[in-house]
Length: 299
Image (tube, rainbow, N blue to C red; front, side):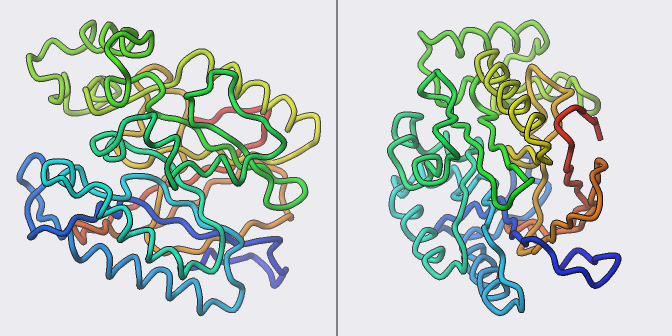
C-alpha cells in the first residue's frame, strides 16, 4: 500500500515500515491470552514478501523502519535467540535500503541491553546524525535526516523498565516503584485495567527516563531552529504506551507499506493506515504521526 499524494508532485523520499516479525522456528501456537493463533515460521515468508514488494517499487524506499519485536520471546526458551536473529537478518540482506532497527519487549526477552548495544540491531552506530546520542551511554536513541527539512528521532521505549535492566539500576527501581503504585496484581504482566491509560502499567512495558526526555528536548530545539519537520519513532503496538509519559505518542507500524513524504504542507499531518499482524494474520488500523517540533499531539 502506498500513501496517495493529492497531486502528481514527486515525493522527496519514501520509506518502508515493518514491525512485529516475531520469528521463531517453532510450530504455530497462541498468544499470551490464548485468544489468537500465532504463525511463527510464516513470518519469514511475510517479511520476504515485504522486501520483494519494496524491491519492485518504481520509487524504492530510501530507508526501512523495523519497529521492534524482530524475533519472538520463545526463542530464549529454546536457546535459539542468536540463530533466529541471524535467520531474519539474512533476509534483510536483500533490502533495497538501509534498515533502522527499534527495540521492543521481545528483544529484551532474548538479549540483555549490553548485548543489544553490541549487536546488529544497534543502528545508531551507522546512522546517527552528527553524534547526537544521549549522554547516558546505554540509552538506545538517535536521530537522522533523510532529506533537508526532515528529521526522524528513534526513541528507547524500554529505557525505564524491568526488561533489560539490572535490578540494581536506577531505571529498574523507577519502573518497579511505578508499577507497584498502579498495579496491585501479584503477576505484574496482568494489567490493572483492561481499557484506558491504566492498562500500560505492566511488567512487559517500558518508559522514558528524564535523561532521554532532556536529550529529546535538545534534538527538538535544534530541529526547531532549522525549521525541520520531525517524526518520532519508537516500539510499536500495545507496549508502546509509555509507563511514564502517556502524552508522548508513537509512530505505529504497518506491514510492508511504503509511505511518501511531501514538501507541500508544514502543518501537523496524521496518516491513518491499515496493516496485518505478521504472526496472527489479523488486520488492524493504526496511526502514524508527523509533527512539527513546537507541538505535541495526542491521538
